[in-house]
Image (cartoon, rainbow, N blue to C red):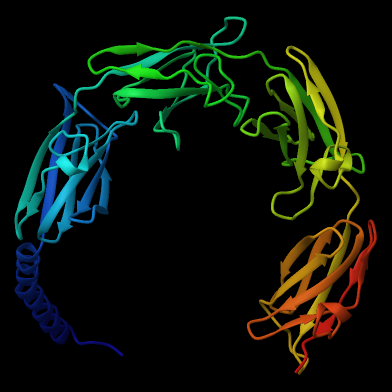
Length: 411
C-alpha cells in the first residue's frame, strides 16, 4: 500500500504541528511539578572527586537518590519531588558528614526543594587528618599491592580500603577523626590479615588515633609467611579453576585462597601455623573435598606451614559417577523446570539439578547410595514413583559409572 506524496506531506505537517504544540506544554508541566538539587564539595580550595552523595528523605533518613561527585567536585540530583531532605556525603577514606559540614545526622540542616527550582548546596569537608605509611615484608622489602583497611574502633565492616603502591606506601585522604584500627593483608594472602602493630587479632590490635589537621603515620612490617604449593589432577589430567582454601586451625579469622591454573598448579602463602586445605571442584557442584580426598574437615590431615618453607601437595580428585534421567508427567509429557535432589542420607549431603525442556536432568556425584527426590510446583515425589522417603528406591552410583533414573509423576 502506497501513500500519495500530497497526502504524506499533509500528514507530516500535521504531525509536526501537534509535536510543536505539545512539547513546550509538557516540558512546562514537568518544570513546575519537580525540582532539582545541585552543588559542589571542596576541601579548602581543592575539589573532592568520587565522593558519594545521598539525598535523604526526612524525617526517616532513607536514601532515595544516590550519586557521586565528578572530577570538579560537582554533583546533581534531577527530578526531585518538592519536599524537605537532608544531604549525606561519603568521602573516600571513610569520613561521613552531613550538610552543612556536620558529623551527626541530628545536627544536619534540612534543605527544601521547591517546584520548578534548583536548590544549590556548596559543601566543605569537615576538619580532618590524614592516615598513611609504608608496608614492608619481614625482610624490609616494599610490600606492593598489599590491602590496607581502616576499621571503626567498635568493630564491624571496614570504613575504607586502599592498596599499597610499588614502594609499599599508602594513604587515606579522609579517615574519620578519633580512634580506628588498621588491618593489613599481603597481596597473595587473601583474607589473612594482621593488625597494627604486628598483632594477629582485632582484640589485640593497638588503636590508631587520627587527629584533625595532622598526619598519622602507621608503618607495618608483615609477618613472615610460608607456602603451600601443589597440583590438582583427575586421572593424571590437570584440573584448572579449582578453588583452593587453607583454613587456620588456631585462628578462625585467618584463611587463604587461590585457584588452580591451566596446568592444575596453585600456590598459597599463609602465615606460619597449622592449616586444613579444601578443594572446591568446581564451585557450586557440591564436589568439595579436603586434602587427601577426605569428605570432611575432621577427616583430613592438617598441613604445617613454617616461615620461609614450602609444603608440596599433590592432590587428586576423587572418582565420581553420573546420575541422569528423564521426568515425565502422568500423561507421559516432559516435566520441565522441576527440581531434582540426589540426597545422601548417610552423610547428609545432596546434589541438585533442574529438568530441561525435554524433562532430562543429570548430576555428577561421589560414589554411594542416594535417594532421588523430584519437586514440582504442586507435588513432591521420590524415585521411583514413591510418595515418601521411607519407601524410596535406593539409587547406587558407581565410580566412573552412569546410573539412569527415569520416572513419571504420580497423577
